[in-house]
Image 1: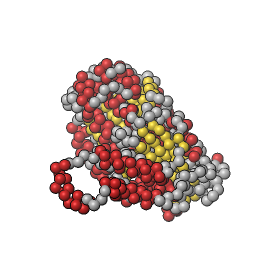
Image 2 (image 1 turned 120 degrees about the horizontal axis):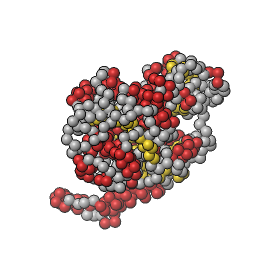
Image 3 (image 1 turned 90 degrees about the vertical axis):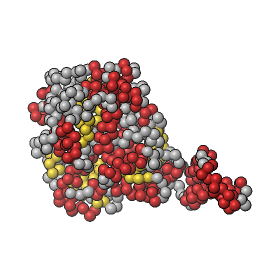
Image 4 (image 1 turned 180 degrees about the vertical axis):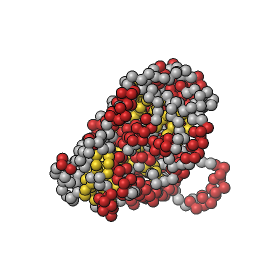
Length: 576
């Protein structure tokens, strides 16, 4: 099926033709005709980079009545980068629809400017949850006429701890709205949203649920923890044409890795939450324009990066939540192209790789790091290729040639070649001349739950787990909000079924233990204890759980049950 056969407005067809849209992707081919013909709830599951934005953006624009100044469409997404990207895409799709106003609202920028844009007219609002809740509280956003709510990257929003914000926003929208939920994965938290707020949603799945893009090759390299950066350098050196994205767990580590790469002469910069919006925009602009070869980022900062031609995604650390691997790796192999996703793991992380393999339904290629001699050869012949392909500006260089020939005339052609090649060649020979074998064999696939892997951090036990609706993002927010510590002070987080663990800097141990007792989390009281080094943190957790009779994230019991209110609703949308 072609776009022109789907029933889209002529103005939209003309705009996407100018953009270069030729053939719809599988998710677009299934979603767009359905959404245009049937105003129902929809769940779209597809890996990152498969064209989900157009899947919901084109039908949404098709329904907009520009003669009605009220907000008719609402798109909610996890980060400001993704918010900006979606807004730009919608603006491009609607370039020939006169009078269509699309407003992006997100944190880190002037809220008054956003308020003025909304008050002027906002047919569609694209928003991050936190900023939208703020505008609702200020009574600057009216959602009473919203026909369609789109939850984009729903799994990531919930993983980041935005569940309460999403609940609050959805409660302000009409009961008879349509909800279109798009996600790369379908964890139980997303399923719960669907059960609570959606009525018999039509489900589209491109590939298997949670599966990764088939055009991605997944490689894993096992090294000792102390050799992680040296291993990263080898992988970059072995891929001289890399245009890549490196993921780290924390802002601090992101900055450290980027600083090391820049100091070692690589074209790299960091992207993390400590940067101002102007700094983030500058870095992303350089990366999109390929003036930057390597971007080092945290999971949160990298959400919304919509850049074609990324050749490699390197997981300097595996994500805390293994399901986030799908989002990370989806940054490469976009638009039908091929890509490589590389995981660096230490000797204790083999179990996480097996967990990821089950989720993405793909096996990793367990590989050895490139041999130094092969790296040197790769760099040498890459330089030769660049020399051969260089264009000579005869007119500009002509005036310098007499002096160049005078200084180099004594050398034979072979000597000149050797000397020019050695300028780069010697650098790699010197670096790798005394290099050792960095590959390591894991002694155990189990991660110690009672002991921190970082000697500068202590390990803490939390009496709540997955059964209580807790996830990494929610626990991180509870810790930081209630103890007033920086996220960088928090390390590894493990969420188990009945309880959890997290690492934190040793110097804030007393603060953690003092501030994080009896914190309410969805009707349960959270208790935190420091684990005993080297042993099991808890041998019996059953008696520590205190259920105060409150509900633990049971959406279906709230406000008489949204399903009860919405289950028999009639669509009020008048399709044009």
